[in-house]
Length: 406
Ligand SMILES: *Cc1c(COP(=O)(O)O)cnc(C)c1O
Image (tube, rainbow, N blue to C red; front, side, top):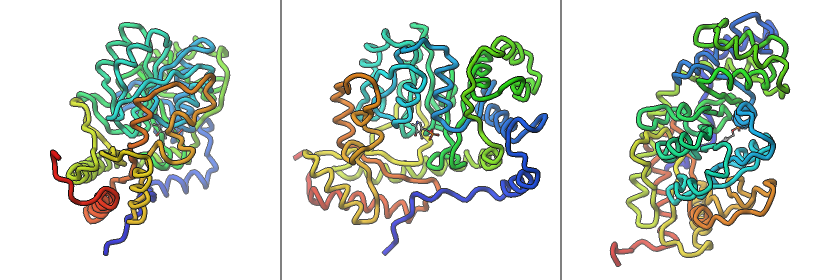
């Protein structure tokens, strides 16, 4: 019998990183602002911005730091309400609270995407919006941008799971005012920890750069599209000199050395991740008990995990029994709402001021939505193992013979 694949290990870091890390270790040049120009972090920022077709990028210590700096760069007043989807990782409401703002949770539908009626109803009270494309599921960005543009409300995209995802041919993370990405080990590009934000707005990036810890004139080492002396960027930095606090959320040169050679791997990881996901999704959808929601029409996905809903599982006990049966067959399933203290269940975000909101739609989804890691490096035999284990686990609980339409 085939062995259960290990879905937690990352891919090896490309060989090319080693020579650069040796060079950095030999010189001790680990701080991004020591070299007069072209430090690995500055080169990473330029390469990432060019890859995304954005004017500016700022690499920082995490995606959480990128989200926090985005909100601070928007200069929101103390206590400003920021809409976020109720299905995301606890880091997102945490970044909002860290920026002295108040998260307002928006209902998420059975397909893991933002419920646009609830979004439109709550938008008038908001001063900013974070669209968290949780697990890479893109919400209706056309509808969201139309509503937010009309109301003059800035959109920050949490694209931590969306590197390589397209919406109507546009790169996710470039649709809102700022896009934030993660280089934590469970994301498509892995440096253990790290994050990056991208934007076309010189003032926003200048504010974020200074607050990330570019004290004194270190901002001069940041490059715009015109290189190190980009005039638009220099003017923006001059406006904000000495006006902002320094939060010191910088990235180290060592992390940049690990990230840079992985950027060339992104297209392959996206292609393989999408093919793997679609292969397993087709298998799961052949079971009457499992359902993988369709992406919205304009979306081309770049998944490194798969989410599906349990169908006809009437009780939480049945859903828990499914997760146990899958684990017994070698595949770990997380039912978002059923594992204790899950960081993606909004009722566990007790650090948000006020009462836990009543969000019945999101809650019902989380009680039956399953999460399985599916790294792009898995081969067909491993994918067959995962799909087979999940389908058999559902049959363990619900029985094998259920005629359609009865
Ligand atoms: C991982 C993740 C984050 C946080 O990223 P860090 O780099 O670990 O801070 C934020 N949002 C989503 C959707 C994530 O998956």
